[in-house]
Length: 398
Ligand code: LMR
Figure 1: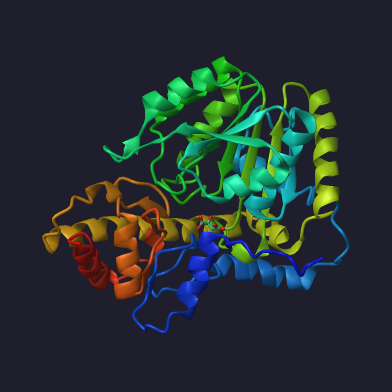
Figure 2: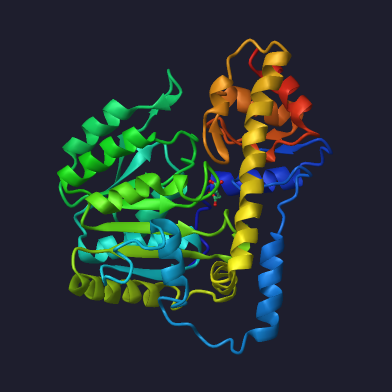
């Protein structure tokens, strides 16, 4: 069976991670994969996570299966985090949330669900988007199309082209929107642009699939879901995929969720039976530990406050690195204007660096960014910013 198998190229982002790890250069800088790093270049375990784990160690009673849709405590906690404490959808029977292995697991279950209930529906993703969106939905067997998102000339959202494309979508198709901290561009719609987008999506009868992977990493826990809230207010049906990897720093615990919003509670029960079926056929039930950490934190006032403070610390550091990089490049008289980096949101920035410039940074300076020019701003720190500025300044003179 395996003698004739051809090797295929691995995922480019994961390959970049390995290449960085294997580079012996002591001054290497990792601006590749989207993982938060503190000022020492470490990806820390949040203190509040350690506290929740101590509590769990003392109080957890069983390692029994938690069922296909996961922890029942997690669902209302995540719904409140996304929608706000007293949102009318919560408890209405129109929303249900299944815990999944990370945000990627949620996206895959969403793709499988769409394929099971409406196989002719297409999923529209932004151009550009997180490269794995294509792989995940291809795995589900759903057709993927792209809508315009990035205006390279202005380093801004291509709002007019995006809206025009939405009006051409077939009713019943699905549009994937990044709730905040757009991956890879770092360019989010403003509130008034969100109003235009949600109106267009609702009028066209397209179902929003909101990928909420960075709540709290952009402007704040509330601000980062303003578009999501507009969409669920205006559209009778929606899917939301949540990741707790970044905002709880629980990358390797794989905590995520798929929330399904339907027009009626009857439809919700039926749809969740399909969700449970997709999960059972895929990984049977999600892992318990990471979700138990999130539940412990979100259901305790003191721990929740501590989490919000640690999240704000991560967000503020990323914002500081954005403005510091822009300032530093100006100070060294860099001939290209990078001021737009300070305006972008979240961990990622489409830096405008070409593939050639990115390869120069990697080969000559051990600085690892994605070929598209995406940089992870969280990889910048006080120790490496001068080297980075010097290298960028060289790269753009190629
Ligand atoms: C990224 O885009 O770097 C992150 O979402 C991590 C990943 O798995 O690709």
